[in-house]
Image 1 (tube, helix red, strand yellow):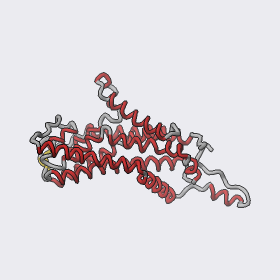
Image 2 (cartoon, helix red, strand yellow):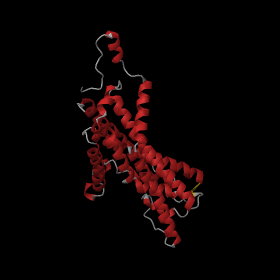
Image 3 (tube, helix red, strand yellow):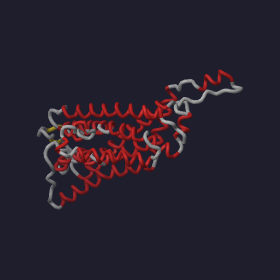
Image 4 (cartoon, one colour):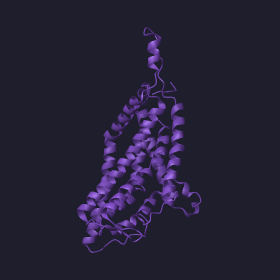
Length: 305
């Protein structure tokens, strides 16, 4: 079969049974498919291990800063708005550990984890021989692919929130909390700082949806989950390297990772929206382009195993 629609039932059951066999799936069935994909994704040991590694990053950063502070050598940090420059403020306010952890994990650790999950979404099923059985159900290839992508996007959100929650807990444990100073030098309340931390986490998660669509597309090109994961992570590393080459500055704004650290502008007063909106628009474009490419490939793919 080259399509997901099940073969009409013939025989003693008659035309009525055949009509029932090809009936379109109900919305409730689609929700059940999405629920099944989410449970499958988040029950895998690999997924739990990735989330555990991501949760450990803020712990290591917090302990390192605490040790340096105890030795009397505070970190100088980088320039304003550069993302990791937040590290110089952690000793004054533990909430800055949230921003630092997200800035530290976003260039590689977070997208690498997303690349592993996205790359395995379809190719892993094909390699395990379970994809054909999934397509026997009356979901159709489009609904199955949408459920796969939704589960990857859910992982983007979960992974980002795990980093933020771990950083907040470690920051509260090791450093003082209270009103904080923005990049622009203004003071905001701790409650507003928490709100901005949540908004930053959501923006970081949204920054990964374009790369998730790219990984899903790669996953439809092969029947090997390992090959799809390696290719997706390889593309991530390649783009990150190309984004640092000055001679390529004309095309760098079109790289999916170019505006990732623009979330730092949410800590300005007033907020600078220019790069933030460009980032979200670019992610939407990648999601549409590579999502469409994944759909075109998947719906035309001959599933034989």
